[in-house]
Amino acid sequence: MQQYEDELDRLNVKVIVVTFEAGFLARAYIEDTDLRWPLLIDMARELYRAYAMLEAGFWDIWGPGTWWAYLKEFARGRLPKKSEGDISQRGGDVLVDPGGIVRLHHVGQGPGDRPSAKSILAAVHREQRGTG
Amino acid sequence: MRSLVGQSAVPFHLSDAVEKTYSLDDYRDSWLLMVFHRHLG
Image 1: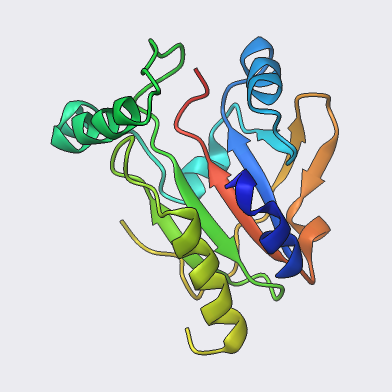
Image 2: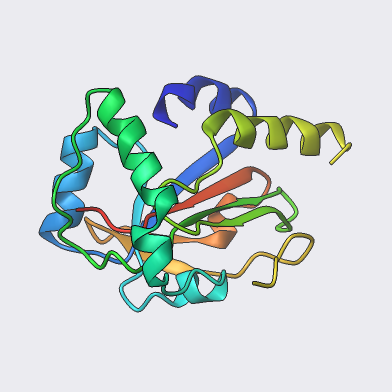
């Protein structure tokens, strides 16, 4: 997503990243990824729950979709590493318009289930044109 | 899962890793993309 930072700026899209993990993990993540957006910490997972990002089931975590996602990462030369955090927590993406209305709400079923950056940008374009 | 598309965004007031606070109101008048991580590690 960070590679699309300029286009997001041009479209007046602000980005925040939300995690439930604080302290060393959060600081290390910011440093490791050179994160230029705010990393908000929702330790109580209240915002996660509000957007229905609850606990993933066994097949969501270890099913074929996950293995396919890891295979694609491996093909890109990125080896998966042992996870440190709560691997059952679902992630997702929420797009909110300037009027405070949710325009995109995606809850990931597993590790590989995220809308691509291009599809998110397409959704922004579509919503800004008023054809969404 | 109930989609919240078309509904008002959920207000939030959260801090980042250096204790700076952010709220939904800070993003009024712009689009906001919230990327929720599964886990960082």
